[in-house]
Image (cartoon, rainbow, N blue to C red; front, side):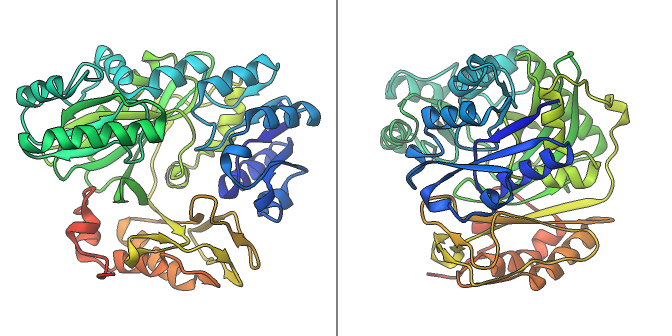
Length: 450
């Protein structure tokens, strides 16, 4: 087992990793920017070191400073969390080059799944359903038009080198294609350093359903079922749940087997997530694979009883998975609400500032994963998510009721948050019926006019 782990991240996920390490008897090293000097992860870790000024490019993405800290602190492993350096194959290679263990997949797996077009071809060859579209990036607008005519409108233009909604455009008619193509390429270049885009069939009103996988270094790969992630704004998830209201046991088995095939196709090790789009007829299509722990991992933990972060560490330490696929069981229903410092009715505009009072909810089946405390600063330099509220119930109806009660119990003063939005969502009749899709917020008009 590792003796000391550096967490190359911040906020609630850094706190989550610190707690997992503490349970395993592993020492922890936090890194922080000058803006995060008083952050919770800094206060909880056994050691903490400043790695740069507030901008992420100079601190949490500053590989030389992070690795210098790792060497200075004498760590034998690095956990990247999510975001930042977690899906950079180059960073994983550097960590290994310094004789340390990267708590995540091999660089080759990160690289093969990091390019969406290459990932699509890899999983297609493994028999995983993919959305019809171009075979890799398209060279120019003429090739894009030819592909669009072949697969039929509407089509989706997507950046080959990244996600999160950047470099993504839905095109309903041929006359819209040229402008959308250029805008997508410009966004892709600015966001990911590559203008390459590819074209695929647009699945209208899909559900976003993902499968959690675990793979050890001994060839064992299992899936832990699905998470429904259809409640999104600007392609960013806000609420996740497990199981999905739309997934039957038969569909779960089929999607799980496809996810396992995708993981095996790249020799995957550690925790990973295979994301699918699910259409109204129950057909599912590969979207991408996230080669890291997900923000929404707690809902899977709640219904399976498996600590995913602890498993990441144990797998990286060379231990085999203690379960076979037939050992995995799902109990009850879990929902996660991302608690963000933002104003939903103003297009989710960030609302950073100092939290003057924080009262976390409690009670049966309630979990609050947070990176803040009363008096903590939510910095304008980083993502506005500062906590996650997770609840578990015997069924979906109880989980919704428990979530509503916990949201009422949650008090955050000093900044504006999206708590009221989550309450409005829990009271929405279509949400309660499980009639979800990625355009749910717009379709149900859950936001007031700004």
